[in-house]
Length: 216
Image (cartoon, rainbow, N blue to C red; front, top):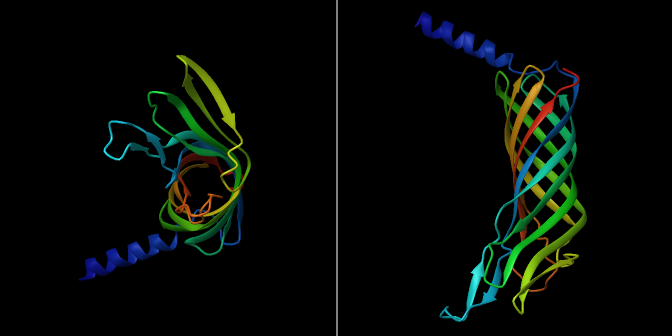
């Protein structure tokens, strides 16, 4: 029983010291990483005589992008911190090639502002959740089409997509020395489709980044 109480006391003491910074301190962190992004619900249909319905579905696939920017973290209490970021994020989606169309992708260049609560569950390890506002300042879709045995490239302004969205970022991070590895899943809440009568079309992004803590 004494050993159990001693072990419990040591565990509580260690939990009490899991915060990475002093209460009231502010840490600024530049970061860079990669995105795996898609647009959920943004499926395409094309004419195919071999199908019973005459059409086949092309599902929206993940594409690779980049993320870069800054985040600031304020230590509210020993285990809890609040972070706010300004991040450039390359998102969008892509589709598999078909007989008369290939290299179809949507490209969104945007700015995301994530606001998260970070809870340190053990030394260096934090779980996080919050809200994120996003604005796309440039977007396009591009593809190659087969016309009369020749391939032609096309690009449009992707005007069917709205520039604003709101997402829930969920993630986990681990600190070693001044470095932080951060893995997040950004779950889009708002539909970005401008088309009337269409089902919800939302951003989905898996994001892995590496940051350096300047104020630690």
